[in-house]
Image (tube, rainbow, N blue to C red):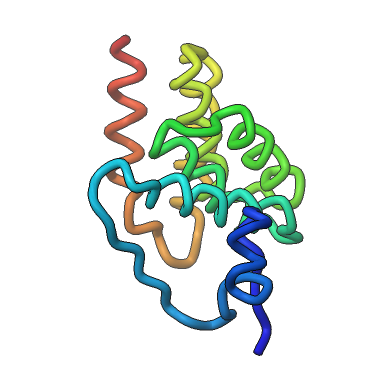
Length: 140
């Protein structure tokens, strides 16, 4: 059975090299038990090994949404964009810029993302949300 390291050496050793690939793993425990930190380690390890833009986008999105490891997240969104610029990673880059107080850059990139999304064969499900976000940034 193939296993995937989560990036915590002692844990990986306890479970014979990592978590089984292709399975669903549930985490439970009381507040403060470390579920979020465990998940973050797994995500960060996956992003470090990632070869495609999607995995790096997922890691960057997780970091931004959970306000953890933002420096790593910025690197991953830039790496994702270096591999392929698309609606999805442009919207996340715009959100990073806005989070960092760089609203001019955020507005421009979100505008580019929305234009790209509208040109897609299948309009992204969240494009109206991104348009609303851009309007809010323009009013700031």
